[in-house]
Length: 497
Picture 1 (cartoon, rainbow, N blue to C red):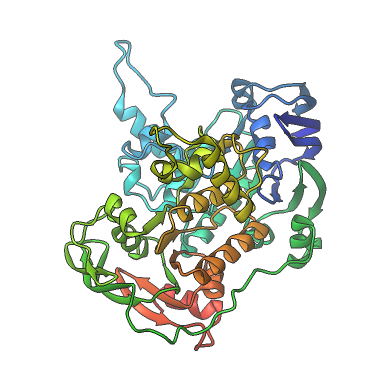
Picture 2: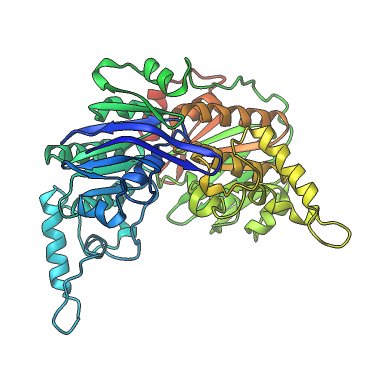
């Protein structure tokens, strides 16, 4: 499969610029680039979501100026997006057979046939250890991702599988499981385009890598001929290392801003006690389901404690809910920015100013548009949000800029405590560095920050103290300022070793 001279222009943006790309049969081709480089747009053209302005798509010697979604599926081209499209309440079998339920002459679903066919399909690709009657929501994240990939490859005449950030939501110990599964697909002669901001994954699983910059493919390289520094330079346009915040020990610890006493949430965490002081950046880390994420959501009032006390600025936070948390100055940014964070069909300006609209009303209780524009412009400039205008819908921004819009919406409220879940998930190295610098600046301005992350290096590089969670318990409290701790050492603690 290949594309020739593909271009695509959106209002104010040339998203794809005269791109040529070829994927060989049975090859894993990495596709890397900064947020906004054009990777997703190009993949949506291959799947028929967008119509290119110029160029051709060639599949099995057949040439298309535009391929429709139906033609893409008929030609065996399927995208597995970063955000899951599985229906969590349905069983594994129902998800796999969703578009082809066998029915009797009376129109009744043949459930025995559904379960049998699903079992046979999974067995063919080595997933016979998964019970097809199990609801998808009961599976581990890596099993859910493999089921979603499995559903894609059962497309008739399967030729090209596009994986967009497939490891983004996976714990460390499950990534290798997914890699082994993907390698098995390659053996079946399926071509794979593998999109990831984790450049180390390219070296582990890809045969070649195409680098995309500003809508153009600047080169396609055998992975064996590259090293990490050179690939980073190709992607970012400069020599770049991950930003590491300059930290100093917080010596004036008179009163904690947040204190937890023997906090328990059944099936999530037990007897958690900790203290967090003003201006600290605190890391919560651990395997998925270790309790770190659940505790963060409890601090915002999404989940309710079964026992224990939460004290914020000396006040007991019983009966905490998100509305009260916001009034107290506690702001939470969720991991899933597309589904739970930004409002995709609203503008950059509306997303930023949403929490402070009451403060922008004039004497007639009408929104003062001039003040709203001014405030949104201030935060767009302050955070370096790249957008054609304040009125641009957020859904058309890159993932990194969507995340910055979320940050703007959070800090426009002047919070005291900012809780962030996976703040750099699916973001390129340059934008990660920009977000890390923003966190450092917010800390200097007096905001206390909790970062919940499974990215070990960002926790080590940016946090004053780190709490490691394992099986619902805090198993270690680490101060990178005082302790010499390597990435490998922290991984061992996260894995409970």
